[in-house]
Image (cartoon, rainbow, N blue to C red; front, side, top):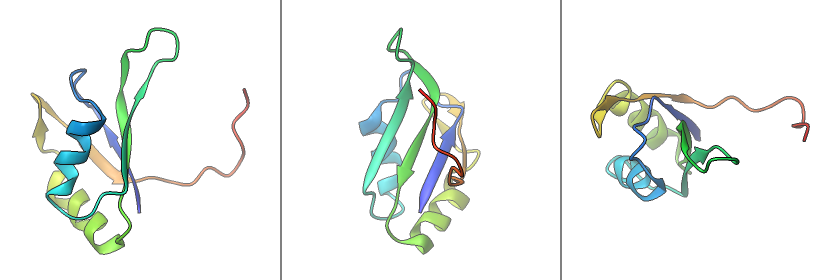
Amino acid sequence: MNIFVGNLSWGVDDIALKETFEAHGTVDSARVIHDRDTGRSRGFGFVEMPNDNEGAAAIEALDGKEVMGRPIRCNESEKRERPRKF
């Protein structure tokens, strides 16, 4: 399950994001999205969990939970229907 995580504090990095979700199951990857020009966090990221039940439990447990001073928002990520344009 691919999980969208929003409202991240600027101080959250990939490792902190992964550790937050690992308390609820196996995490394949965790990535905070950064602005390609400034390198600064854009305040959201994605977590990939191979087990859908663990992913759903993580969403339920973490949605609204405070991480590094900000309440995060979690929901299942929707697949893109069209390819990105560059």
